[in-house]
Length: 454
Image (cartoon, rainbow, N blue to C red; front, top):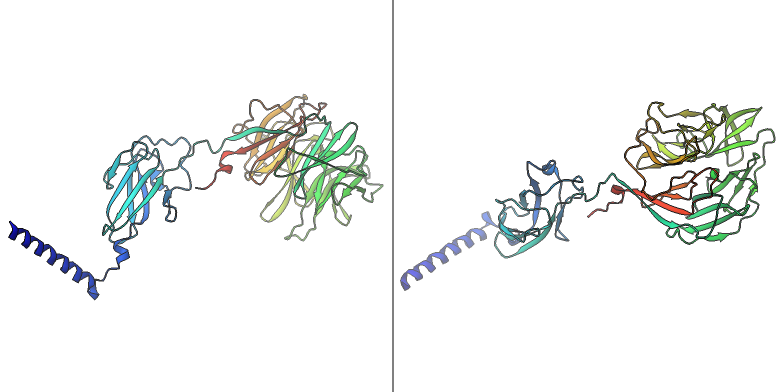
């Protein structure tokens, strides 16, 4: 028996010397790191019963030892079946073995011949070709746990507890939220850092016009503008001290529609977009920062003069100003959106067969690459809590996807701002035309706009 063992050892030693000689030869040289490389280079999953699984792309984070899909599978994807795994190795020699440990079941599976339970993360340990090293990964198949297209709303704060406001306009200005309010038969100004929105500092407000139309306060190149009910235009370089613009006695400003930034394509400078009374007729007019005005065409009878919402956006490198909802010259409420690229010519956007219902005081914004109309007051004076949106730049509108929270009070005339975290903020608002301002800040966000990458 001793001789047999000795012969066996001699034979094993000879084979090892032969392998060593082959590996050390110039023609068959193999780097040690290749033999000891235990990294995974590619990873994929398959199961005929799980739609879209085979096309899922996985990221392999070698630094943090994680394998995951950045783009989560659709909400509702069922992972109750086991899944086949295909692994590619960084070493051309492959691996000695691979071990899967299912966190869902605590089962351990050697090799890739069996299916794996990916309903919870799986720990994968790779044993290098020469057995000298291992590398362990956490592999995770991400599935959206909430409906990514649901818009979730919640009350963020009472704006200023104990205060009663008759009117309110909030805008983002000079890196702060500026809140202009009508209270106690006068006007006041408060500001809050954008990171706060719960603590408001009162600022000095001087020479602010009587009977100002707060809803139409507009920024143009860092200056703020507002009109009064008697047709005078006022401006401020800091939001606090106000002065009257040299007015056109024969052309009072009826409505301040918004502003347009300068256009690099057309060469047009930045302008205020207004409606003025010229020779007894309502006309569109644009006014630049030098107080030079350009008269446009006559205002259509269905164009809103008050109670509209507005926003700016750019398409095909052309900046545009968009309005929606509002009350026209015949006192009718609007169910249309309008747009301009110069302030003097406007086009109606909405298809009469697929538009939002008539209203004024809607919160109008550009959000998630869509136009949004939120709430408002209907022709009967009833406050609304619906949400319409348009994917085709205001032509057709849909109202069946996004809904408000049950505890939300229907309202119109809220100030709407989209913040850096993709929340739609609704400041204040009224439950009726003659009601006081609701002293609340609500915010909503489409779930997928808040998803973070792994």
